[in-house]
Amino acid sequence: MRNLYVPVLVLILFSSCLGYKELPVEYDYSYRGNFKKYRSFDIMHPVGMDDTTTVNEIVEKSIISRMKFLGYRQTDTRPHLIIGFKMYNDSLRFNGYDQPDIEEWVKSPREDIEYEQRKLDLKTGTLLIQFFDRRQNRSIWQGYATTLYGSISFNNERHLRNAVISILDKYRFMAEGFTEGTAVSIEENELE
Figure 1 (cartoon, rainbow, N blue to C red):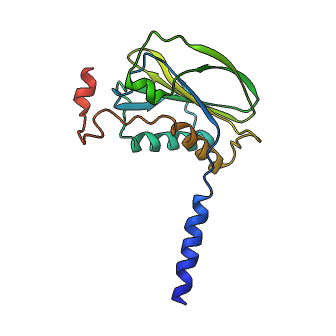
Figure 2: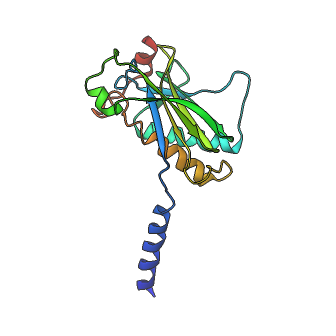
Figure 3: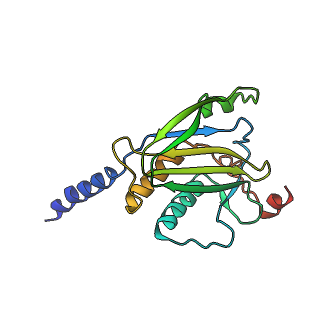
């Protein structure tokens, strides 16, 4: 009887891995982003609105989890990055940019590169996540996911988490100091 548990356990673990399906993702970034210098973040909430819908909670928790995994500290006091997200139920035309791969660009960043604009036709069920540099007061990165063969179901928790993971997989920058194992104190952050 004990020998039966091991194959069943392996089957359950394997089937849970099959639940993740990477979605097609596009992203754009600002040539003025300081991607290796950010340490903290917070989620953008509209002033005067406390949106606690289940859908927003799932997306928000997934973003927070991913950012903490990358070593970022969440704070509501002068965060380096402010993260906003928006879900679009209808299809939309979106302006994107043809740019060098962000990881290649960061190796020798240049601000004098021209932005080559392109139009994107996004299908229904698109999730957009934007990162704003609080000090520069500008958007420095945005990623968007949609499916090629249907929409992201915003009523399906797994679809939502899958979309967030797919988007944030394209943002691969660890928080400054995280890889060296140094912790940044709140006081240091407040001085900036």
